[in-house]
Length: 477
Image (cartoon, rainbow, N blue to C red):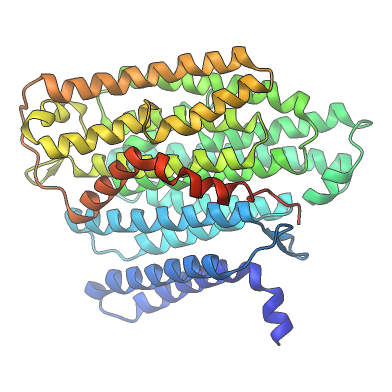
């Protein structure tokens, strides 16, 4: 029995969280409707905290822990990314609890759907085969379809849910077609076997399969040129669900993509580098220009996410897992702050989504304006704030590895998004406030303060994070 439990050690966190999801469903049916949401929330919080504690307690060797059937690997890369998922999910649940109270919704399934989706994210990042990865991706995305359309009487939410459903089914179809081509070429879906296989003789057909998988995952991420759905879904979804998308959903797909790039097809650099370079530059350019013309804070968040996707995908060009983790960590910190700003823009009892409400807030509310500005400066990549450090290392390594022109193009793209946020900060301090913001709810206030603090002092924790990230390489299991 002891050996059996030890063999299952890598999947304990997922087991705890999935058990909490099942218990939340059962318990919510056996209590009065007025208490069902509170009971479900407590179960999911318990599951998330238990999973996080398990992630902290499990000792992972350099070669990782694995289960052969189904192929599942827990390496240091997966451990850190899963911790980001769990932290982001807790923040989203805090946002969701306040939003449900604000909207006077008593339905209990909000937290349960988030817990189920996060379980899928955790399975995805540890998948050792395409089959396991696909199951994790679908487990991640199906609850998001319902969460996006959660406001059943809201036209925007229903429209966003419909668009997201079409996009996800299309992306899954592309992914599955690519996997079927790879299976036809190599006779396996196992990452370690694909990595060891001789790919030269079947290269033309193999690249077709890889291309379809790439298109499917880039569509799920919302990277350019597959980005057209992102702004509509971010705007139409309930604000806590927008926070979930911006913080961890995109991180989950990027981590899955990184495992494919760096493991089974790590030798195909002649294919990955030009593709990722083009997609990275397109995402940064289109995202920055799109952000310039927005009047909705949620659409601005969406285009900012597209820009962040561009920088993360550019980091994959180098095949550098520690640098990738630096990007994912700073993205979570700043995206959490940005979505907290979105949820805190309230005039009276009304939640405002227009950027105009930020005008003059730096003068009217100096402390709040300063906190908002620090988050915006981090997202812009201005030195010495959080977003700057990962980008600086990316530019430096790109130049050292012989891609100075690409590094220069990335710098120009970074200046574009910097202009967007500098213009927003100027508007906060050089115009008069026409509307007075209400006090931010406690969860949003706490996240805004923490995000602003880390935006300023991210450099102070870089040394400790580097020590963790330098050992966080992927293993094939």
